[in-house]
Length: 144
Image (tube, rainbow, N blue to C red; front, side, top):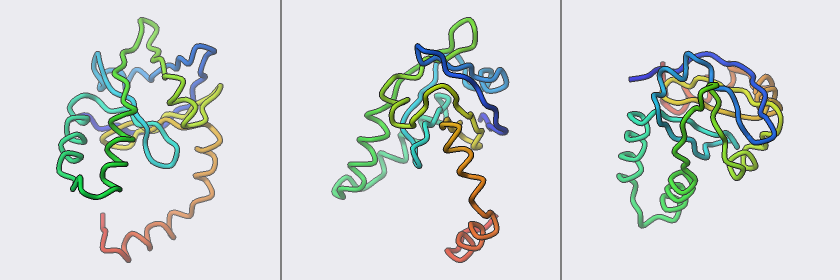
């Protein structure tokens, strides 16, 4: 299973194409998915990890409005994509608009997927105190 790590900043051309770092391209395979994620980010999954997400979504109780909305949002916005010969991926306009990606994007490895966000959104993460976030997680029972 692919494990995505690290970050890099890339330009997005007028057609909405962005270079995917070669280390990520190798792990993604020929065809992969890009979809809406949390915090106005886009998520990119290789097909194996995407199937795990779909399986989890199938387990959600569809009687709840939140489950239906989450499933509709994540699955409904999926684009099956491939990199071109230059290593670029075309990010559909609706997804670029969702994430407010215009001329620059930051690609961040997030273990089982890649997050793509505007440079401004990435810079806002510098305002997050990891000590406070960890304390909140540990207070809820999560641990590393």
